[in-house]
Image 1 (cartoon, rainbow, N blue to C red):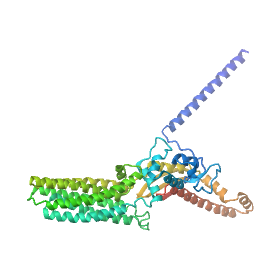
Image 2 (cartoon, helix red, strand yellow):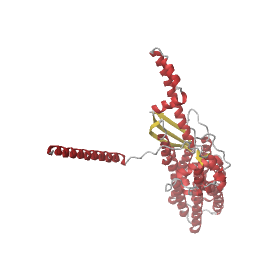
Image 3 (cartoon, rainbow, N blue to C red):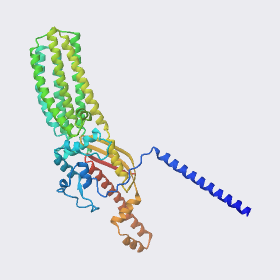
Image 4 (tube, one colour):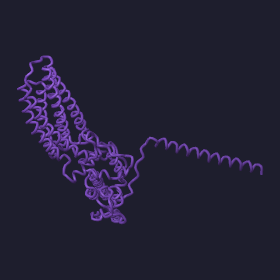
Length: 478
């Protein structure tokens, strides 16, 4: 009995020790798993809805766009959807209806409810949303740039002639600097018009992604021209006047030319300001952020040039008036140098913003993450690698990624959608030699490879349907 009791105690202790060690091992494994996952981003859960991103259900449409049942009553419903208990509508129909109900896109954005609180849209994303809405309502997003650049070109031609005439008659350094400024503005606007024309050309074999970046190229050339000729010649002429001062001529014609220039540049600048302000309000952005985003480079260049021209006219007027008051050419030369510094500042900003786009600026991170999440949640894709999303110009973007496809899922989808397994089984049973089996496998293997191509086309259409400005989607299989 004593021996049996000791054996029972030892067995009990051994079992407790085993349970304790097992618990420790499980705890260590849990801790290791948590350490491994501590700094990893969790994948988003797979979508539970059965409809595509271009559709929206009734409850979400009313919540997100602040609509009522009566507002949605006359909208067409998609013909095919799985869950009959939900009423689905196309997103573009709901958006157009919301704009009509609320009065304007600006009013819609002001009342639209944030689905994810605490995460406001970035300026770039507001710009893309405005581009999408405006392309459905008013045509292209750069529709007003052509008119603004044309008006600025005509007014600067008249301004240039008047300033050169007055500078020749008065010998004013500041007025000559302003004449150079107007000349550069005229040449730049001619370059911008050519850039706008070339950017609208269709892609060809030499330029498969199109000519969208020509707007940025022409704006960059304009910035370099302002820096080299406008800034350089103005400062050179001003410094030359300080080192070799001459006699002061009557400034009557200078005042006439400056007054005329102020009217011309003011009209051109006001036209550009109204167009930029309209587009900035439509994107729910401030004017400064809109200009910094360089959404329409041609329009931004005109606005900056005209703003600098108005400030330059005021500087030249002050310099000429001071020279007349002091009977000295030194203030006039200083005014020329100040105008050169002003042009240098404007040109540096234009060069920097346009060079950033030409290098290949990436799309907003939220958009890239959304596309990657959709790809990872697709049942036929195991993982996504080497993602690159860049802008190709105004309203044009490119998305590239390498995909690791799930061969089992693709094969199951092929068998489910395009094959009759019973007939295939009977066909295999009737085979008498390995050659027939090999031929059978080659036929279906080729069709499975074609199925991968069909899946790539489906995924590409899904991306471009949600983000229409992504014109080029390159998906490569690993």
